[in-house]
Amino acid sequence: MDKEESATMAGEIMLEFAAQTGVSREEKPQRRYLWTDAFAVCNFLELYHRTQDEKWLLLALGLVDQVHQTLGRHRPDSAKSGWLSGLSAEEGERHPTRGGLRIGKKMEERAPDEPMDERMEWERDGQYYHYLTKWMRALTRTSRVTGDACYLRWGMELAQTAHRAFRFNGPDGTTGLYWKMSSDLRRSLVPSVGQHDPLDGLITCCEMVCAARRFPDQDLPDLEREIGELTQMCRARDFSTSDSLGIGGILVDACRTGQLIVNEAFQDLPLFQRMVHDAVVSLEDFGGGFLDQPAKYRLAFRELGLAIGLKGARRLSRLFEEYPDLRGGELAEWLHPQLEAILWFHKLAGRIEGFWIEERRKGTEHWRSHNDINMVMLATSLAPGQFLRAD
Image (cartoon, rainbow, N blue to C red):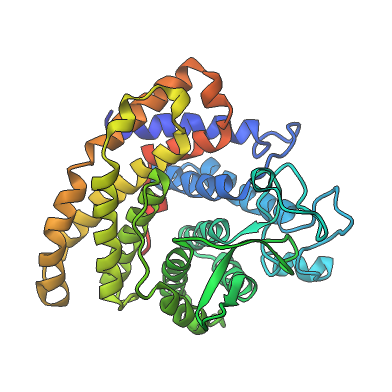
């Protein structure tokens, strides 16, 4: 499938998503979910970038507003009301991310005196750090495409809020980030630590600082503290994983970091080398045997996350072909065999896409059980431009 065909299919998928989840049809109930919507915003922006058709930009901006109005406020079935931040209605409109953003799960979060049920916790609302970083990126891309600094400001304010709420000091003096917090950010719901959360937060903060250079006259938030502490959290951390979505995430982070290095917005080269190395190790251990499994044993959105990451690796390779003398050429020289090892797996991306395109066409129950997230991540894999950019 060539780029034009891929973009056409991505457009069809995103129009269907917009109609089904209430973005484009007012008569449809809104179905907002932060992870899905962050990918969707990037997809709409990419389709606008490719076609210059204003309808895609309007869908992106409309979705941003819906997410803030829905997930930036307490649930309708909650005893609390208004903005999560506690700000007044008027002030909350100006700063919709200062209280964070809910995940968008159907079930309300567990009460403070309710015992934890690990299985049920996946179905309950609250806030995830790694969902918030996805939304920061969506806001950063929106600011870049529109030239409006307010979206970037909202992303940076969200970064400060999330870091302040999720950060904790361990008994050994080290710092970390809780996996899940309550909707009001006052208590941890899952105290364990996400493996890649500090890395994703660090790169996202660096990306926003880089984007802020375009607005020298704006008094934007300072993320120096957040960047410093997230960098410390990443020290000596092992990023290798056996999860397809996690591997894709490392590859996407490496792609974005490469662009930030070119733009002199990321200086920690050993950390960059570690994430690339760990991605290679993870891919080689993971292999491609999963492709022989029937759909019922697979999850589309997790595999599509890997496909997106593999396309990010291709972009990273081309970037260093364009800048072979960066940092004296030593970085490109080190990176070349690493990327060769990763790109050996690049063919998996097309096979993953083809398999799930067919499952979508057949409308199988397995596809429809995670329909919204499957749709947007397939569209991202088909047209990943804005999602992978960090300029």
